[in-house]
Amino acid sequence: MYNFQLKSLMRARFARDEKGSASVEAALMVTAIFVVMVSVLALLDLTRLHGQHQKAAYTIADMVSRETLPIDNAYLTGTHALLNTLTRDPQESTVRVTIVRYDANNKIFKLDWSKTSGFGQPLTNHQVRNWSDRLPVMLHNERMIVVETRAMYDPPFMMGLGQLGQQTIDQFIFTRPRYSPQVLWTDIEPDFAGS
Image 1 (cartoon, rainbow, N blue to C red):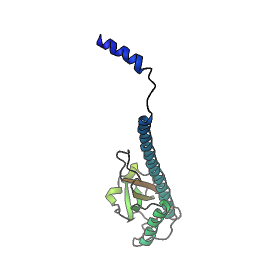
Image 2 (cartoon, rainbow, N blue to C red):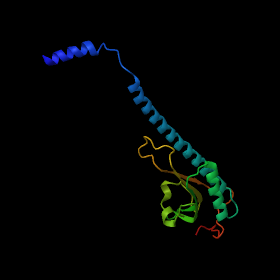
Image 3 (cartoon, one colour):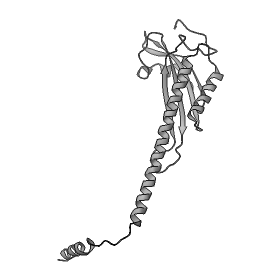
Image 4 (cartoon, one colour):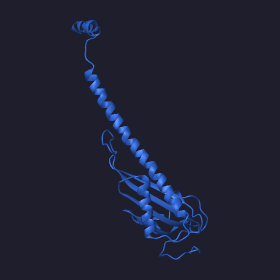
């Protein structure tokens, strides 16, 4: 009986009552909308920067692929400066240029040379030998230029993004040499025979 009276009282008075204030609801919704908008801005900034790094890595790969003379540390330092200029990114970054060739007899990739500018390390022959899932099908002794860029990204806002703290933006771009059979490093003799 008590339950029945409470239900009828709630229906009668509470359901018809139109008095109240929207300030509490507005404060909650404005805060939620602000957090969502700041999160979207941070994700858009990450997407923008990822696109800039991809375009810069393609530019560097194309630049290296057109070289007919041996390149050196000054050239690699210049590509690193170009990466930072094209991305307009003050974050820490690195560029790694690697030349690999395919050994069809053993079905493995072999390293011609690998050099870095920045905080990265050059690759070893063991690290590139099983790159068949990362590179296209190649002919015996065909060479491929691999340009890798990496940059650290700190989002401008840390609200509501969960795991989106410091991120790394990695790019892995490959292309064939255009005007010569291989791109040379200054202190490495050319190996046209592919031994």
